[in-house]
Length: 316
Image (cartoon, rainbow, N blue to C red; front, side, top):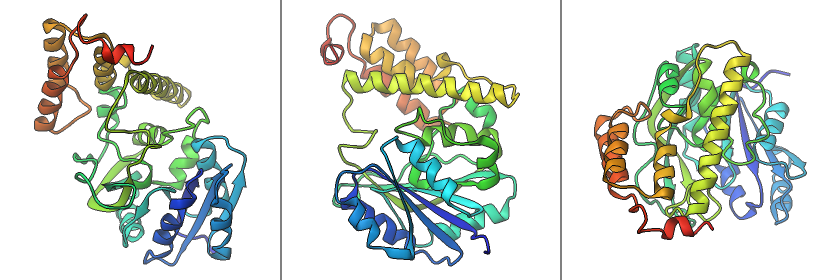
């Protein structure tokens, strides 16, 4: 059987109300050498009946709930394409996404990862905010990631595609990434090859209460993210050591982690100035104006130590 050029890998967990749109957006692409694999990670809603309604137009695998990483790994194992394109079940793609991605990989055999912007939407699909990420990064990003503890203006799962031979070199996503498995993809693959950013907004990212990223952060959410960032750095360093790559990441270089910690603890004027200075030199945001804006906002918005304790108290 001829190997398809592209595999579409959709992970689904209790998104029966959304997954149909994700699948339809994949079926509507202007590419023919494509296979579509959906892994349902133990859904308890109407997902099964919706997925089965597509018949042989998609390959469907049902498994017990094991988390996003396990679902993506299972989808890759069932796929055959040379290019792996990931899609969360609550997102969807614009027409032409797959052809643009395939062209980028074809033009540069050194690429390990290709991505594009996503247009955030409300739960009903209405656009909101500007496409993300705002800053685009291309080329060899390994030195940048080494200086920023792996942080960069990274894309989310539904914007990411990787070359299969890079997947084979990296291996499966560790199952510790039950959520935010894209952290592994955007953290590891820049060490395995070049990265290409497509300037267009070729997909749609639905914002709702089950997303990892939310507009309001309480203390419990901040602590969860800090633990996730620390675990990601540790997993990345284990990978780099196992592959005998010289780079190592340091938590002290992870500016968002330092900001989150300061939000929990509160800050006096000296701490604000120190945090602002660190933000101005942070390697994770290449755009100087955005880096300066983010650093000044972070310092300005910190709660005062010993006075504004509401954020810290929320997690107790």
